Image (tube, rainbow, N blue to C red; front, side, top):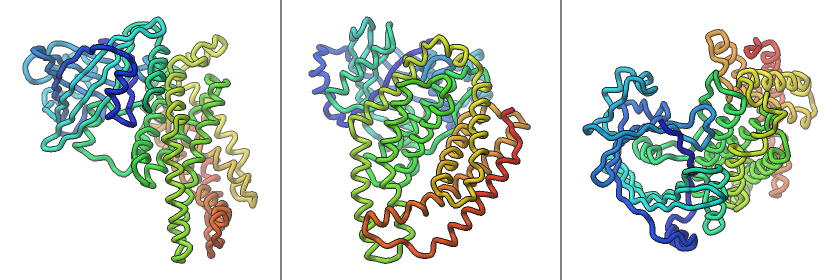
Length: 480
């Protein structure tokens, strides 16, 4: 079993790949044509477990490869890989392989799911005392009668400092716009089999009890970056309100992770990322405000004004998402997760190496305590104080969700689910109150009169938020 460290890049303009190769002065490439068959169970068990199993034809050779996302300590851009010569036309899962236990009797029932044909060009590049293999894959995913072409750039570290990979990525980014790629080839094909909905929602973060706090933070932050990038890709092409909303959720979740793990990551870099993420969230927030307001307006003239404002807001949101600042921000965060200053601070080493559960329990306790101090504001008349409580509740909810698998024995699970349900209820009502509070200002900015008849709704939301706050205060502290 090998651990490979690679960074995948998506090009905004895939047709510019040949010009990029010339601009880098790479010279003649090593070229090969490959065709890979990927296997899965009928219910897509492998995909759900985060594994891919393929048999790839390379010239006269046939190679079986099993891949899964990085394990503890490998970092967010490392993947475990098992490779061996293929025997026959069906994959062979050894009994001592982790996938054998995960699949059980289904290990013998793997069947072809899709194929990917690839034209690969590769170069070895010396960069910053490291050797990096740069690969350009021109691919076509084939599923039944459907197909989709795509081009990928992969930078794989052969030896040396991982920071060299990011140095090369930035060099490429100065020549053509690139973004961190978060979809594997298999995932691209799987989206042909089962097309995704209008957005990608956050999934349960796959934390394990043996993880350290640093490993857990990397895993959580990487999941947030992936969540954002999947929805950013849709936002750059459409005015899909669901994708914009989920992109903002992803950014807020990442900021919440910075708060939850502040004892180990705090510093100038983390502060800068937090500020830039706040800026980007705000740039997307104007369009989101329009999406909230428009369904509440009945007057045709007012509705026309707001729809026009929405179109402008989405243009601005896409401009912010497409900007060099955003592209570089995601790349900077990716590098920081791997080799940032926080990873080498000696004084914080004990905190980085303590168990993720211990560190997570402390983070939940801290945020829970803050929310309890703000409880009175939830049912009060001060909108700003209530908004502060809302932000705390949001960070607490996301932190509990991040860490859910670390508090998942029978007794903890039941208490955690109840606690989260009360938090979600609180967040829903506080969010509605925040929308009501900001509505007059947003409408005034568009020269529109406030929407009548919202007073009763406000009082109802305050009462229900206060009730949810009581349930949270009385809930069992499953993390203790």
